[in-house]
Image 1 (cartoon, rainbow, N blue to C red):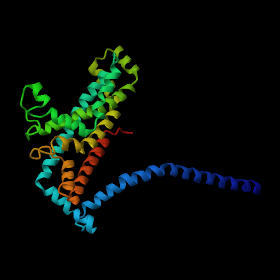
Image 2 (image 1 turned 60 degrees about the vertical axis):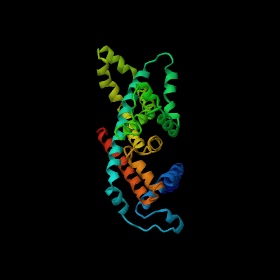
Image 3 (image 1 turned 90 degrees about the vertical axis):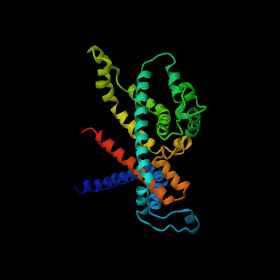
Image 4 (image 1 turned 180 degrees about the vertical axis):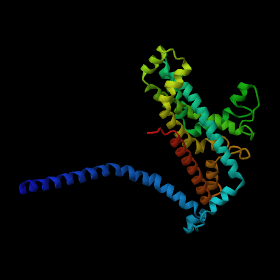
Length: 303
């Protein structure tokens, strides 16, 4: 009995040390990612929240003084006349872009699912809008949409003021953003389609299912997890689009394309009111986060 207990004690200590070493190894693997997230995401986010609670202006860089003002910055931007317009434009811009990108992206993904000559080359060319810098894309589209010398009006034989009329300017930037986002939607959805077992389609064909029923009962349910990812990422990306709008319209005319992202930029880097600009940025982050959480919870399958 004594001999057995004597042998068991060193074995338990060895097992304990091995587990501690394994846990330490796991933390060492995780530590670089945690440090990276804290340095490049956690600190900027915390600093932005801090700035939104202060009167942070250009003088702060010289004096180092940024008086604490609480929620005053949030109250000012919410009470401003442009906030409601920017919020509505953000919603319309995000919803319009997502619907256009997803519908066209899904149609192209289904189209490229069938093999035909040069399909690989065409898929590669489809990525070009995604590869171009947004400033370049915006500059080219600004020329295309020009009222007097633009290619689009020349083709339509019309004089539509795409960039100078408040009634169509938002539609113009939505169209451009749809063009930019189609490659992302097509690529992700096409990848999801490749993972659907072909046996399901063969069984559906044997049962006499048409194209609509095949899409409804096989393609869509199998593709739903990929669709969730595409839509959530699409909302987060689209809601904060800044450079494209600044290049094409600059937020005008008459604030017709002013969004929360462009308003945050203008408050911070044109009016140099960094406190209100940070508050506007926090509202944008909060809206994106709320939508993402609601959408993910709504699409969560019961266990």
